[in-house]
Image (cartoon, rainbow, N blue to C red; front, side, top):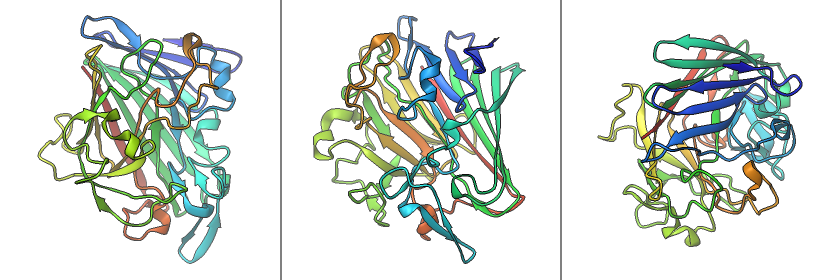
Length: 342
């Protein structure tokens, strides 16, 4: 179902036979609400954001946004490609973050509804021009959101460039599975299928080390509460290296791996994340401080939500040991991430 929205903003609703509903807008290819039933079948919105859609045009910490060309950080906004140095916009101190000052979250996408027997889909399309935010090559991107009749939100990404470039796309919803006016997510329970993580410096740039989680507050291999060791970290904002050889393979597709499981005890909601990506950024909304008023007049405070951003690693273009984010001219970039609710 489509609504003309506010001014030129277009709004889309997806509905599942199993009771879930998703609402998206073409500005930033943004997920603005996701209503999921609890153990009693009662719907509640489990993502942070705004009631007034026009507020998505203003400053906010990427609520529900599609992120690109490069998710996460690139140190000093610089990288080399085939002997040529590229300088990107720096919008996180002296570093490049989430595509720059006008990343994919700050543009209007073309959008179409596709009716599928397995669920309704919105396909968002955008051309990122050569030189946009400093990136080389024209890049044509398609991001498809599909809500299935068993309450799975599928996000499929494709991109093709006419010159060699770098690409790292992700989705940036802030989840609180309790729904309603959020408290904090410290009582949520989390499992990450990751034996290793990337230590970072004071600017949250990876040091280059790939370290074991064992014996550290980063160890979520077994389900435990997010708040159990968060005080030792100052708040999580780290990339975890997914165990692609894990026996906990995805039941959804042979190309996907189970990356994370989140459960919220009071509502009974559970979310599994399956992905084709090598990493997942776990972030506990450390920068929220109550200044932002969101849905239903709620003030969003520190740790009001969690983000689980499936992606390649931060600063990969400057780290030869990390999985490559290089995309050759004419080559097709593709990745899939599934949020499975129960």
